[in-house]
Length: 165
Image 1: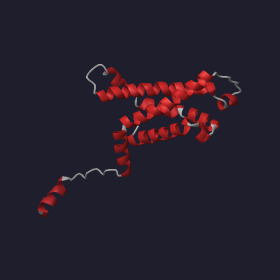
Image 2: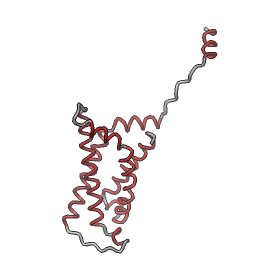
Image 3: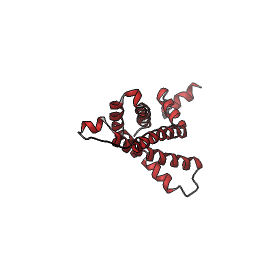
Image 4: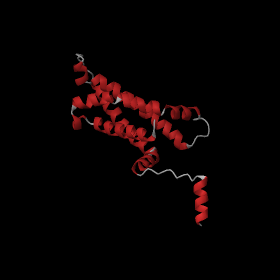
């Protein structure tokens, strides 16, 4: 996947996660369906970055830079909080459960777990973005003003340039 596609995926995920974070902004039904729709792009993000994750885990005990260790810990916590918010969201769901004819009566603990894990996910997402800010700005900068490849000079062009001097 190209850097441009990855950046577009990541920016879209970030915006959608922020929109889905607060049901008051979108309404409960949009909040729930948007959260379900995020599962596929989140899985794509994980698959695209899987090699990095495996490489970092394997070399974790070795002399890995502290930033990579922090990155791995943050990413692992982000994964755990995202799974928790999605699973607890399914349990407390009204719109999605109703669409499938399922009546739910979750306890207050599920709502609390959903709320805490949602807040943790947004916090960890911001830390994740902070850890990758150089890549985001570098890739975004390339999209705004792509560098043109230097033109290769052929031997006849070099000979002509030498004669003109």
